[in-house]
Length: 319
Ligand SMILES: Nc1ncnc2c1ncn2[C@@H]1O[C@H](COP(=O)(O)OP(=O)(O)OP(=O)(O)O)[C@@H](O)[C@H]1O
Ligand code: SF4
Ligand SMILES: [Mg+2]
Image 1 (cartoon, rainbow, N blue to C red):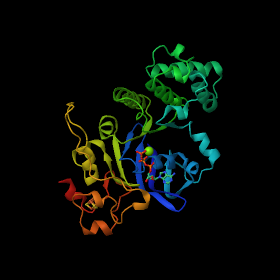
Image 2: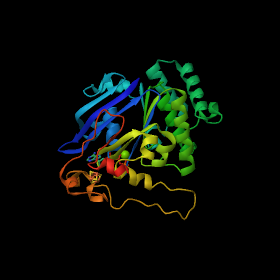
Image 3: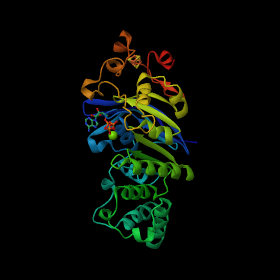
Image 4: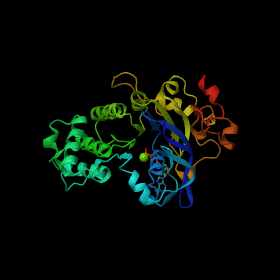
């Protein structure tokens, strides 16, 4: 069953058009990774789905976003508010944007199920303690009474995940949920999140700039570059046979082995800002196989197919 279907999403902020051509579909129980370097449009995609663009003076310009059969573009803020934190949970990068530093964490998590599920005080508390346990937080009944500053970064991020799960959502959107944490804790939390999604048969949009996170956690992936989608498909297919040169380069950046001396290959150059989006294929200034046509013609990104690659030479690139 399709939980989320995004078709040809485009976003404008005042006169600028930082995002266009984003299309993907997510089934119940699936995890999609949205991956790309900084400035590729991952967060704008998430904000578009969540109806949060007005916060930055932006709006959906074209395209559709369908959640469980409900068209979200054009919903009023009131209608969106019922979905956000309810059937759609959001996990942000910085726990302190979700947690109130002046309140104990337990009642903060309770507030979600009280508001969205209508639980009473005792019911909400019991649910929170159970959720904290599910998040493998030791001694959840005593942790319930702590303030955010009494917890480690990793623990705080688990609390944010508990809050996102508080209303029993169908869809979770996690925007770089672990970037602020150290690498070992990052891996633990991503694994935990992936396990919870599978156990509860939820759907997850996992935004990351890390291809190895995608490889370990996701069922499918959409690769983004300079405000547009460039490749999409099942994770195994994408890693076995990347069709877009940018995807290939990102995969080439994953360190192999654990040796400290391994050097990351990196991709030459940087992602252009909105004002400098190149003509034709936006990746052409960094692409090692670009030809003249790439500077003129925008490659098509198919909306419906399971696999898509926006590249004039996609097949050649796969060989
Ligand atoms: N409020 C804004 N006003 C103008 N441009 C914006 C705004 N927010 C984002 N952009 C631009 O849109 C493009 C995509 O930004 P976005 O934040 O979605 O990237 P991202 O992939 O989430 O990057 P990061 O990995 O750094 O979080 C960038 O060029 C960015 O500068
Ligand atoms: S369209 Fe051209 S420039 Fe763009 S990725 Fe393909 S080969 Fe490279
Ligand atoms: Mg971002």
